[in-house]
Amino acid sequence: MNKPDWQKLRAEVGKHAKRALKEARRWKKHAHTLSGHLKQLSSRRLSIKDQAFFAKRLAFLITAGVPIMESLIMIHEQARSRAFSRVIDVVIDDVANGQYLSKSLERFPEMFGQFAVNLIKVGETSGTLSQNLDYLADELKKKQMLRRKIIGALIYPAVITFATLGITAFLMVYLFPKIIPVFLSLRTKLPLSTRIVIAISSFLRHWGLLLIFLIVAGVAAFMVARKRSGRLRTLVDRFILKVPVLGTMTRYYNLANITRTLGLLLKTGTTLSAALAITADTSMNIIYQQHLAALGQSVIRGKTLSVYLDQQREIFGDILCQMVAVGERSGTLSSTLIYLSEFYEHELDDYARGLSSLIEPALMICMGLLIGFVAISIITPIYAITQNLHP
Image (spheres, rainbow, N blue to C red):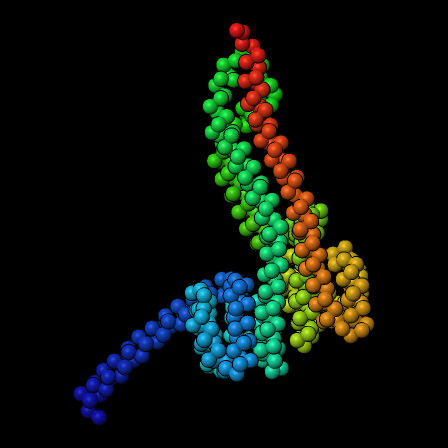
């Protein structure tokens, strides 16, 4: 090969090398962008409604004989949110490349959770995917209904409280300051209630916005600190369980979720130790998470559930301990746990209704006393002035 041909060949190789390097950089950038999108998607939370829609629709399509790829494509066309649509895009690509559905969903732990992934994995390995998806959809629907009961029980007191504070703030900030100059011009000593209202009104007019900002900032800082500090979260969750009214509702809510999740996992063939670990991950209260993790270790060492639960009756309650012992002896633990979840749901519903009927009159009395105090503080000096007037 002569020198010109060699130089030509080197130039051609260099040209192809530059092109290959450019393509590699482009694909690296594309992969980095895709990884960023996946990371961003995996950190988002998918609503319980969308999760239930996905599980119920996929179960229906698989039961009707539609292949899983076509089922996912049909669900993608019916997606209700952009984030959900992107997730289904990734799942379709993974399944098309030969991955299991559960393996693909594991890439989005914040969206679906270990409980849903495990149910789907068990269904894929045992051939009962559609049945397990139905279980998952029913579980998510019940969890959503349970959460609505809690919110419904607390929303009325919250509305009444905010309305009372709003009316009081209006009287203090806008109405009362117009009457204050008249009171201050009097040479007589004002009643104690009027002096208290004047001091509060003056404080709110000068420092009210700062007070609101400090309250909002304090709540936000507390929520962030609770999320990042395990010790603080433990203290808060333990304190919530000891509060008379809120603690009872929290205990019923957690026990209903724990028993239903654990019973459903056992019903689908999950081992007891694995089911306890998954149930601990899905629990909202860190105290129950710690006890469920310890319960799992106790089961691994060969002990029964009832032995550990009997030592923690203050957390789990007498009924749960007794019924679990009966379920273990009779070999119907999963059915017993599901029955217990329904029992705790009914208990929570009855307790929430009774709480609402008790809170309504108490809040109305507090609202009347607060507004009445402000009204009396305004009327009393005016009445004193009119008494001192001579015809």
